[in-house]
Length: 346
Image (cartoon, rainbow, N blue to C red; front, side):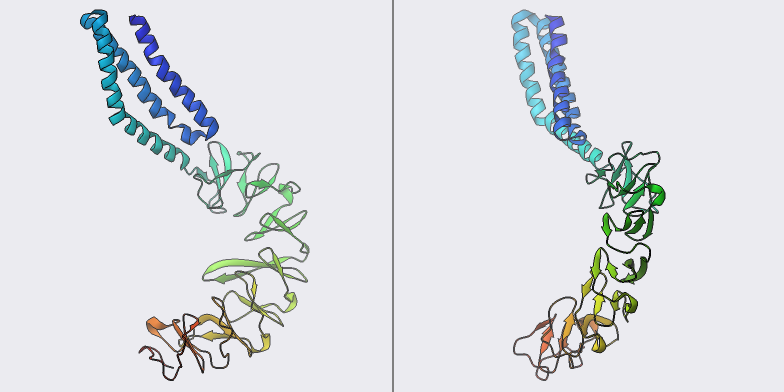
């Protein structure tokens, strides 16, 4: 009886432990499967303690008392497990799973790219730039020769990769990053993982800044490319305007951060400024006011302006017949009778 108790007691919870680990690892992956470790350990300890209760009952008074001791010990251990061991095991398991899942891995050549990582001996890519639960394996990558050559591009001894995918027609020795997300390979020009219909021989990139962030657009002998979009602009006459991020050709003006044509008359275009001479984010031509935030096209372009400074700078605007609050016309308000704040000068 003693031998049976000593052997059989731990076997059952141990089997549950191993079975739960295998099942969890197949269904949800390794990090969550680590829940089985503390739960299995608790079950194993519980099995040994139950055996101890059984043996204690045997030595204290024979078979009858041993059965009584077994039931009493099991009842107490069950209560103890429910009250203490189970919450403790669950909390340790959850924190262990979170810790394993959130292990960031080792960033590869952070001066070139913040998105490629070496994790558990494999190369991974993260769009968010943090290799926690959002990592995507770079399938087929050789960890020993793998190196990023741009924020979204990498090579190993055999292949070229864009993000986590191989560019199957490209060879590492022929692939070069131009600037930002633009690259040139033997098959043409790429913006990220998309191949552009640009002329590879004449294609160049132009750097500009917007709110102190360095950005780029591309151009060949005929067209302008904003990100991956070919915009209807004349490449020969495409020039930067007064404020960062804005370019114009002979016919229109373009906001190059989001590739938006403003559809204005280029010859009469101008930026609307605050009283201190800084840009408002609005512009006008002879026919309409253009806002980069909302539609105020019905405003009078000849008289539209921002009359306030201080804390109301950008809050109120006006034309000859209307007062605007955050780009919305105030119903019934006229500039001559409106109760302007003290820092406004209509």
